[in-house]
Amino acid sequence: MACVAVTWARPESTYTDKWDNINVYEILESNRLLKGYVDCLLGKGRCTPGGKALKETLPDALEHECVKCTGKQKSGADKVIRHLVNKRPDLWKELAVKYDPDNIYQARYKDKIDAVKGSA
Image (cartoon, rainbow, N blue to C red; front, side, top):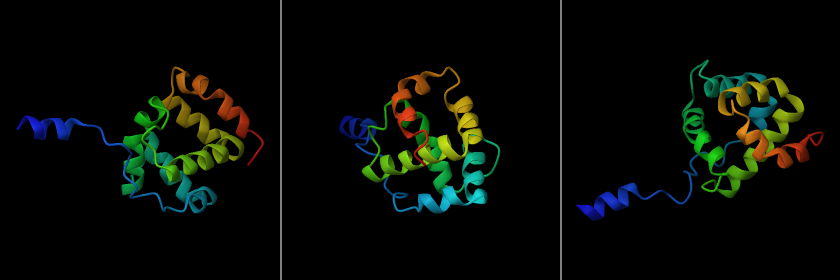
């Protein structure tokens, strides 16, 4: 029984890759899809299964610098950040207020955020 408890409590090495093949560009280029994901993350709307998974994973990924993210998830996150910072700063600000009210992650990732500004 102790073996089962230890195995169950052990953190996974990466987040599920179930959503890794999602077309990030399609979401970013569609106001309707992007708004749906943002509304989900902000608790303002219904979540798709992928949006629900992202909402559950995002706080941990931010806190732990995405160490459990797959390569595709890191690449997708970079694309989303670049898009939001440069093309949708209104949504970036809303998400920052919700997920980073004390400006901890904005400060931690300042160099990365500054590096993508103007490179949409």
